[in-house]
Length: 199
Image 1 (cartoon, rainbow, N blue to C red):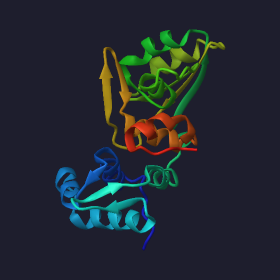
Image 2: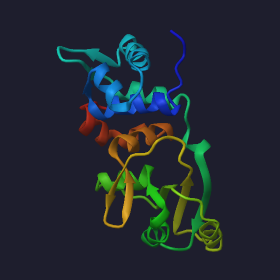
Image 3: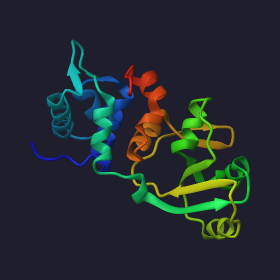
């Protein structure tokens, strides 16, 4: 079977929908995503042959989410999407307030939203719109209180809103963590979403 690049938007959307649904049919994916049945079939067959999904009575189900997400990570690295890194003199909460209007928080920041036991001095966010003034303002605040990483949006992005903040949804948070070589950090989400243990 030819190599599939799951970092391309159409392929990514199919894989993302499979991970979100957990159980699905090829027809439902095709109709919901408005993509050809052939595209869906090619991806479903690929993961079925790898043992990542299995066919049940009513369709397919996820058997090994990590192996599916690892296929995305083979073509995608969070490092390649980074726009800027800053070490800042202000506290993490102040940084979040400063960038909240044009950001979707991801990686550590999203993980700490979903998992109360996660504490980090790093703020990670996708920039939803370019803001040169913001970048300049941040550059003028060097220090050692908070590490900020800003990323460009390279793939379709689903998020949840909480008050004034937006966070990548749970599935995208896991995908991003795996693409950041931090699958271990998402252990609790793997267990919650797909009943899969990450060792």
